[in-house]
Structure formats: structure tokens, C-alpha cells
Image (cartoon, rainbow, N blue to C red):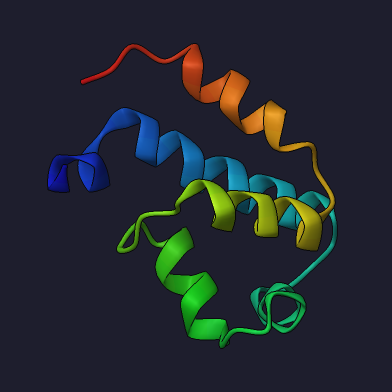
Length: 81
């Protein structure tokens, strides 16, 4: 499972989160506040050093304001490594 941090799907997920956050006009600190976490948590997710589980993906979706099914759809279109 540790290979997932370097997988193309993981890269796509972190890119998706950054893209959606920026489209929403939010900083990492603002997202972190909505998640009730530190900014460094968001930075490690966006930097690819930390995996995101389904519950966290839902929390990111609520904090940023996107439909989590968009992320799943995008990741499903990528061939696994």
C-alpha cells in the first residue's frame, strides 16, 4: 500500500485538491481552519506526503465546496500503476 503515495492516482488526487482549492479562492490556512486542522496538514496532503482516506476526502469536499464524486470519477479514469 505504501506505493500509493507515488502512484499516478495519488498524484491526480493531490492535483485535484489543489486545483479545486485554488478555484474556490481559498488558502491552505483557510481550508485547514474549516477542517479544524493545522495548515501543515493541508500542506502535507497537497505535497503528496500523506494519503487521504474516504472520510478525509469528504471533509475536503465540504471545506472546499466540490462534489467528491468528481474526484472519484477523475481518479477512476486513470489506469492504475
